[in-house]
Picture 1 (cartoon, rainbow, N blue to C red):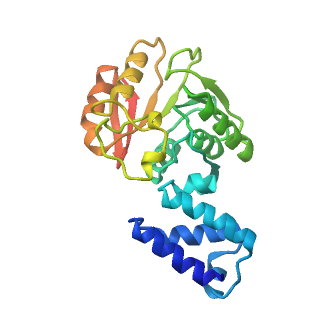
Picture 2: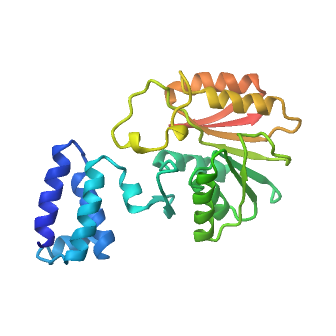
Length: 268
């Protein structure tokens, strides 16, 4: 079978089950397996596929036909222009989360500042923060050791010096923190996920009846802290922003800025 034939058959199968990115997904898989850039793939549709390559491609196609996210099949994804290791234990970092990094980079902070990424997952936010602002000390926490294992792999991959901590939100952190990055689960429990998202870890997605239960626990912990952070960056649905801002206000934080899914709060 040549490249053109495999692409046509595979795209048809994916489109038939309603995957809107069928052709792009297939091209990405071909790029990975054949190690050929997209321009050459398209320019040489007659390229013959070896039996070994066909076996790998068809195995990956079966997984995509089961609606497994493309990043899990590939074992990697991109965030803020960098490649990160991904597996079924962590949520794939979303493009909207990149706005949190933009907000973070705009903050006027002293060189001695300490940054904490709560619920780090793959470590994408913490590692990106460290690479973009190397002078800061960056900590990353998660309640799941399997997530921390992935985050450590990514930190090693990018040469980012980060301390990883297994803890529940802000609990057990005996250190003064200046900035918190918090992309916590915020999807309401009854929200209907798309087929691909159903394959992602539910612990990293759902946040209670209105999606904000975990954020409430975080702000409650911060409200009881003797030394709260100067800034908190959060990600949530735009429809949740008003309620989250009220929760933050009750804990002594005011809303400074909003952009799409991201909110920036500062301590009063």
